[in-house]
Amino acid sequence: MSANDRPVGQPNSKTHDSAFLKACRREAVPHTPVWFMRQAGRSLPEYLKVREGIPMLESCMRPDLVTEITLQPVRRHKVDAAIYFSDIVVPLKAIGIDLDIKPGVGPVVADPIRTRADLARLRDLTPEDVHYVTEAIGMLTAELGATPLIGFAGAPFTLASYLVEGGPSRNHENTKAMMYGDPELWADLLDRLAEITAAFLKVQIEAGASAVQLFDSWVGALAPADYRRSILPASAKVFDAVASYNVPRIHFGVGTGELLGLMGEAGADVVGVDWRVPLDEAARRVGPGKALQGNLDPAVLFAPTAAVEAKTREVLDAAAGLEGHVFNLGHGVLPSMDPDALTRLVAYVHEQTAR
Image 1 (cartoon, rainbow, N blue to C red):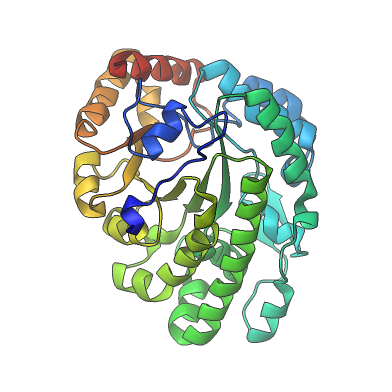
Image 2 (cartoon, helix red, strand yellow; image 1 turned 180 degrees about the horizontal axis):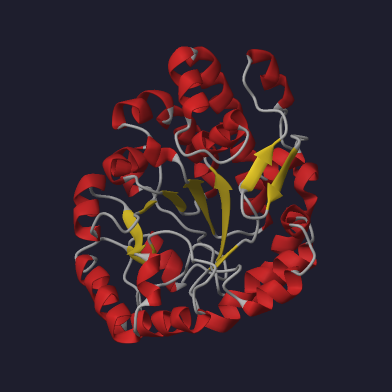
């Protein structure tokens, strides 16, 4: 059996027949499933209320809070899947990297990784390091019932960029300097991060996550040849490490139109597409044997309802011939977005695609 024909999904789980997992497996669905990246977060007043005065990383380590925040958009929007509330730097924090998430900035690393000696700071991640994740997912799956929970992690390149730059970067100059100037160090850094990421995803799957998504937020900064040579092996290692669990594996990055085929080649069952490439063209670039996820421009949600519906119809029409389609935004929910616009969008997609 080829990788493209590999069955995906948990055959005996409560969530097996959900529209979301059926779409990931490229099976017939009762309606196009919908969920949103960053659906739990600052766009919701109930989120702002429960997070008030609690730092981001602390909130990610409190199972009761993680459970409540993860459930909020499922209750409000009636989305077809929940995504575990966390942050991509949580596993790095868990193994002892000195970092913080600064409001308005993002993750900031106190001592960036720049030398081979620095690699020693990236020790193995154990389930005990993130025991709160196991506890939270147990609480969540009990509450969610037949609604799937998506686990997630940051991809090796994006984690490496934060670690090497010391925080968010527009040009990734230190990251690319290492990648081009010391390819052996770079390969070893990404290999270590692939092991940490895979361990983090395994914890989530073993605790009950029905699917996982690998976020490569910054990888769109690379040319295809650089991706194939310097990034794909590490991303493939992550996907390979969790292949035996038979849960759908989703791969998403921003500005990755030129990389879509390679991202699918890395081992994803579902390739996420941002709003820059229509889904029918994305399917051509990715090739057969993959479902697609996306891809309404988040900014569209600020337009009047009629305009939102018209643009949504364009996405659905472009997806009409796909083997499998999960409706999502082309990036995350924006903090200033009206939550009611998201609720209306979910209802509209369900109504328009009901079979």
